[in-house]
Amino acid sequence: MSWPGAGAIVTADDLPVRTGVRLRRAANQSVNSASQTNISWDTEDEDTDGFWSSGATVTIPAGLGGLYAITYVPVVDSLTAGTRSFCSVVPTSAVTGGHALTYRNLFDNQEDRGCVGIVLPLLAADTFVCDVFHSHGSARNVTAHLSCYRIGD
Image (cartoon, rainbow, N blue to C red):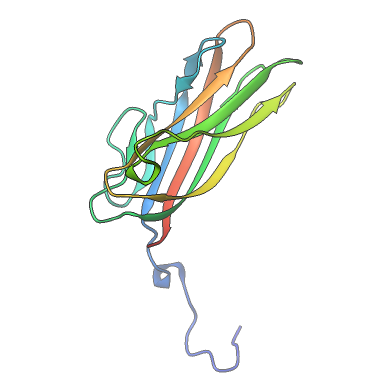
């Protein structure tokens, strides 16, 4: 298809590269009842600048402070009626005076997933973790997805 005034077809290779990271917890991570637990990432799908190396912590690389869009989706198995869970993204930042901020999304009853989507100003060397909590009577398996992309200075 050709648009008036269009000089060429735009392909994915022509789009700007996004700066950021996409992580997953692909294998089940056991989370005990009434225990707020950090997700320990085990799969890196994309990491443009070394945001993550292992474990739970994501770090904003040197020179890449700015505005970030963060999306976090935990999936908890076998929740039953009455179960309340939440997920959060917890950054500790000079922007916040060194204090952690928690962004929560409650999901309950038989919903098995939540989603946190936030935009945060983060400085180079700022870190954050994502966690999950449930109040079911026994340990539950959790998987999760995280994306964190720089969207502005």
